[in-house]
Image (tube, rainbow, N blue to C red; front, top):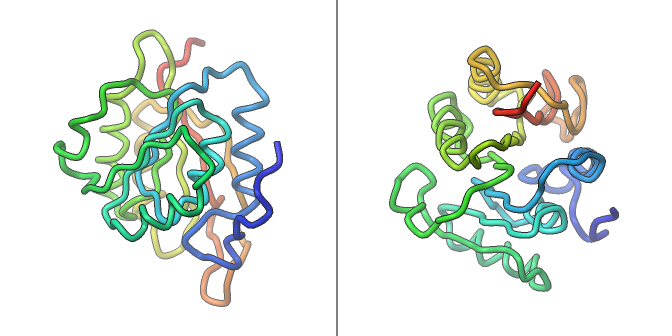
Length: 195
């Protein structure tokens, strides 16, 4: 699967994921027998990763606090008909009132501190299908200024989530002069898989 050539790399837009991250994400979900029907994205930004998710999943529900981000994401995905956009606070139950489906995967890239990432993980797990695994995808696992993200993910792994694959650029990669990754750019975890 090849994505739109107009999608910027992280070296161009620090608020998106790298092209390698996007390719690794596509490889993971297209290279296996994983059920990939519904995906929740917590943190839309301008919708570049949303675009990739819309190619992988039948339905994508994406949430962002800022209406301007949602408007930009809609513009960047104007030909995609399988995306539902929600403007709201990802940390209030009210935002999720109209979501009545279960998800096969949740992409988490919202507030980058320990408490919020743990909240995202716990909320994601409530949307797991019965008798099916759920996959949690994270950006900024190795970001040097967002160590709360890595700490929360590492604690979730200690708590029973399984590492499926590291994705994106590796430790030591610099996408601008100020930022060099201290670990992998992203990670995919799973919960509820049969051994």
